[in-house]
Length: 141
Image 1 (tube, rainbow, N blue to C red):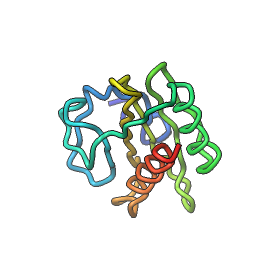
Image 2: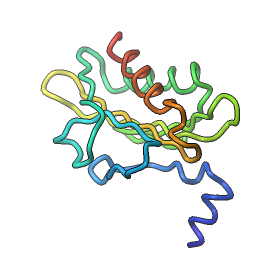
Image 3: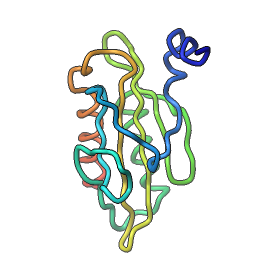
Image 4: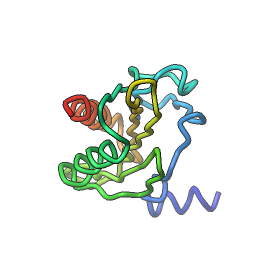
């Protein structure tokens, strides 16, 4: 109860690391997930991205460029194989979470992406835009 009140007052606190294996999609249309079915039991809007020829540091750097430089976001948490950024909506500055997970694959790495809104009704497609734009940037590397 107290945690929910804090998240209502300080919405950035609602954006914290998530475990991809534990991720369960809500019925809310305020999120967008790209992950393979074998990585998460959640329903997905598409598969993960295969990245060949880049190490994990290069993938982290590309995601950082997108989230911080292009979208003006701030890093909330980063682990060896995952991270989350807070990206604010352009007009009202509501926080959205942009999550990523890197998993070593036979050839290269596969990257799963997830974006969720804290406020807003469907957020006018921003979460899908964030995820598909970042996916395109990663595939172009």
